[in-house]
Amino acid sequence: MKRSFFALAMLAAAPVAAPAAAEVRAVFVGIDTYENSRARVPGAGFDDLSGAVGDTRRIRDTLARSHGLDLGAMPDDAQCQSSSTAAQTLINRCATKAAILAAWNRTLAASQPQDTLLLYFAGHGSRFIDDAALDQASRYNSTLMAHDARKPGAAAGADILDWEVRRFIDLATSRGVNVVTWFDSCNSGTASRDGNSATRTAPDLRVGGLRPIASPQQYGRYGAYRVHLGAAGDGQDAKEVGTVGARAGVFTTALSNALLATPGASFADIAARVVEDVTRATGNRQVPHAEGALRATLGGPEIKVPTFDVVLDGTGVGQRLLMAGGGLVGITT
Image (cartoon, rainbow, N blue to C red; front, side):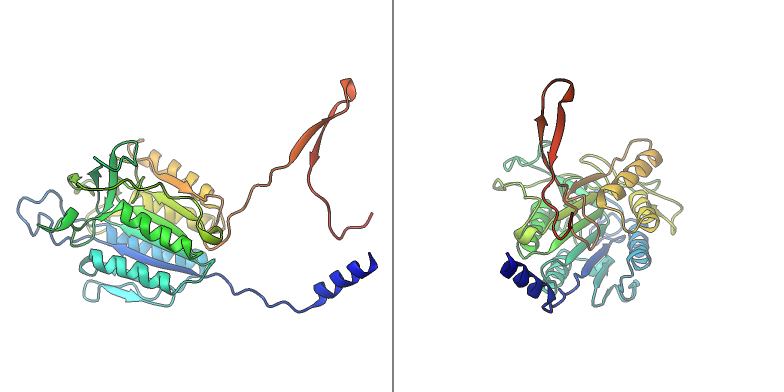
């Protein structure tokens, strides 16, 4: 026993290298103007937006204040993209499908195990009919509409399909990188906006030849987790309010308020506040969706809930419950 205690004491005294602090990296996408909207293609099924870029600016400002992230400059229409050590931001014409996917992959390549990768999207969302895969109960799968979405002749209209998002998340968690997705778009409950002047959705797609895809696991290699907060469920529009030029997504507004009020809160607590604020503001017509490792915090690990065995001790009036809570270490009588 003395030798074991001495060995433990020496081990405790040995210098231990401090682990590198986990980083939060982000890709922000905001799209108001679309290459194939009614403004440019007669007969198109959707209009441009006016609040998505403003939402992107708002959530960036919020994270800079609430979490001290250095996100670089917010791009403008002339220079529609920006990058810093912690973030890449794409708006309007710079936010094509290829550019968005490339930004995701570049940011993942710069990440290490235990880092967190935040993907934010504000813009049009849509659905495609799930005839073959049958991996959603509604038979619909959701899409994110990049700037060049609904390109005539393009496969699936160049939308970013939810299985493409899923495949990227699986890749990230397999490398030990946590992934957090915040999507302020229509039909965003399973993957991924209607206002007073423009609806943030587009006609459904029909996509053939899909193969069934296994549902993603909540955790990847090394325990890396995924968290998703979507602005609206399947078939729901994500609302934006305010006058033209000063419009704002109801979901992003609620999310920004929650982050500023309780920056250290778990995703579950943030989601609860966001759901309450959005459903009240929209008269229950828009209900945000949350799933994944909701006990985690942005940039932090998930808080595991311990469980203990409980047994009955004794009989009759003197019977009691005993909880086996493990042993105390390093505490004397």
